[in-house]
Amino acid sequence: MALASYREIPIKLVDVSLEQAIELSHSLNIYAYDAYLIQCAQQTNTPLLTLDKGLKVAAQSLGVQLLDLE
Image 1 (cartoon, rainbow, N blue to C red):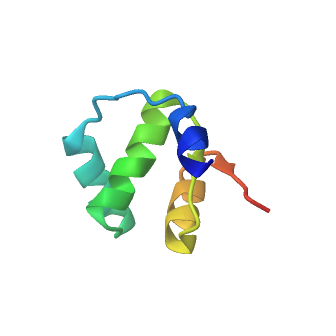
Image 2: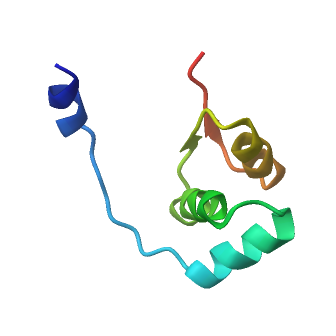
């Protein structure tokens, strides 16, 4: 059942600027992979879904919309 639900998730490949993600990582003092996720959300104008509190704080500081699981 979980696999069937997973298969229904629309997946879109996005070319994210690695240079901008690295600059973001440096400016926010966060891991590059967290910055990459934030960059992707900003670039595609989509909300970010995460349970990572540090990533939430960093994303919110840039005005990135978050999806809440509560």
